[in-house]
Image (cartoon, rainbow, N blue to C red):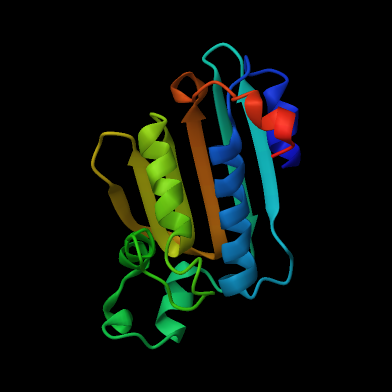
Length: 172
């Protein structure tokens, strides 16, 4: 919410609720799955020349691949790091969560980057997934193990709708 309110000052009345909701989802995933000793860190940046926003969220928990392996799901032991990250992006996939949120967080993030001509990059344990809107995934294993998960998103604000001022009248 704070990032959304801050960036709305610079973004020509764009509705940033989709961005804000996805940031919330990333933090919900940290709380639900990461077992991180810290809540997580976020860095945001606005690029006025090309009207883009990027945000990176990082935790130092067990990581997506380890979290999936620890859940003992069918075939979960067969997932290399990058394959586990790709699996976590599938709509409806979840290892555990509340029923109303189950399996939509990372898929919603993927859909946001696709609809906003954006870029999504996830590093977790030894896996890396890179996805640019309209292109195929680039994925593989790293030569090192990153303890936790780093998610970087870049979105093009030119693709966002104008803010609906009628919502402000009713306080929504």
